[in-house]
Length: 155
Image (cartoon, rainbow, N blue to C red):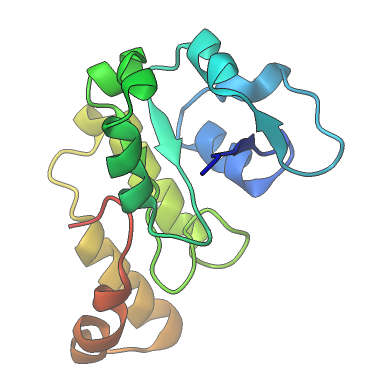
């Protein structure tokens, strides 16, 4: 029943995506020994981030966000109160990893951090274009095989 929260090292892809999207990682002061660093809820509260993005490699991040939103301790966080707790997306893999999908994660995150700079951005359309250009997959294949795999905060 215990939940562990981890933050990536500053040099890893997850942090770089936040920076490239125009965000400032709240965990920049955490020293890492080369891997993800466990942090407490108290530390997350002390950072008082404007937005919080949940990544999960084992479960649907949207399910985790739903559970956190119903947790009284998480409800006290400013980002949760303001509706800025989001589930990082994935399809076959999470969009924050060092494979070709990182560009989807960057695009999605930039739209979340700066919605005024990306009015009307359709991340589903961008994702379909990504699969067409990179892998030569047509719209039918995308709708039948990729889109049903969407997890996280995706339409």
